[in-house]
Amino acid sequence: MSLYRQTLVQQRKMLQNLDLWLDKAVAHCVRFDRDGRKFDANSLLTARLAADQFPLTRQIQIACDNAKMTAARLTGKTAPAHPDTETTLGELKTRIAAVVEHLGTYTEADYNGAADRLLELPVAPGMAIRGDDYATEMALPNFYFHASTAYNILRHNGVELGKKDFLGPMAFSPKG
Amino acid sequence: MSLYRQTLVQQRKMLQNLDLWLDKAVAHCVRFDRDGRKFDANSLLTARLAADQFPLTRQIQIACDNAKMTAARLTGKTAPAHPDTETTLGELKTRIAAVVEHLGTYTEADYNGAADRLLELPVAPGMAIRGDDYATEMALPNFYFHASTAYNILRHNGVELGKKDFLGPMAFSPKG
Image 1 (cartoon, chains in turn green, blue):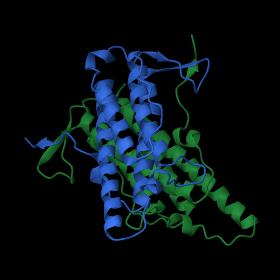
Image 2 (cartoon, rainbow over the protein chains, first blue to last red):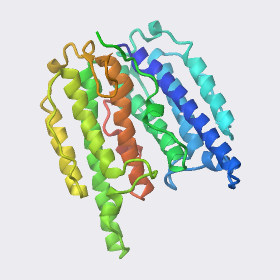
Image 3 (cartoon, each protein chain N blue to C red):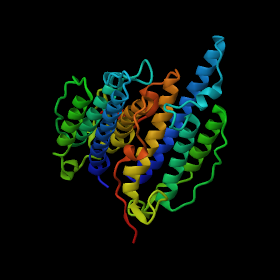
Image 4 (cartoon, helix red, strand yellow):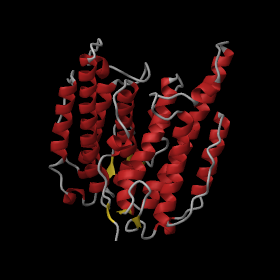
């Protein structure tokens, strides 16, 4: 399987899953309103699991940036800028949609040679890492960390989500 | 890069990282004791981020099982059983050590043909999924979900951990 499918296609699907988690967060807010409970949707966006950990909004922004930078680094292209100005669930959904659309412009051919490409990253000045090592050891673990943390912040705040929401559709086909 | 390195080698390293997170949890308990604060280490093991989500002990057991089952399924081997009886941080470290040691018995040659192997899983009766799709869409996302959730439960309870602890060592080498 190519790095295109292992990273871009999978990360794009996970961002689409994340978008559905935010739909469930919106439904959660609507239910609170309907029940007459005091509830500010902004409290979800600023929620965090530890005082020195990023809140939901930043977790989602980082997941989006990770996906677009993984693609850009592995292919030598330039990722579009997104200014981190989101203050509502709707704006976060728009951010996700923009990155999902951008990722859709890549093709498998863009990833020719990606595994052997030597990447220099801000995190390790004067050092380099192969594209396949970067994908396996850094890009994907980081991506899943921020996606999982966004998911857990929502779960911690009562949003109804389950493992199927996390994983999304998978390539099962009828046996035989 | 082979599925051996993408799954087994990376998951084995992540379990070793997880073991270090538990060392930091032990240090956290020692600090609480030293400060004279009432603290039961068992409260960490049963901590969870949502009432209907698994606590720390189960997150770690699942991460261990995921790693050994990923290897067993991709290679057609049988994974050893572990009875989920851990009740202390020390016993969880022993569980992790047992799985890390077991994973060390695999070789890259065991993964010949793993990408094309058709897997039937309890989660989808009558269906099958290719080994590479299983690794990318199910095994790794699930593994990182449980590792991230274990990490977040510890962070939520005040254990001092950072992103370097999550990622562990990476294959950077001097540039040029």
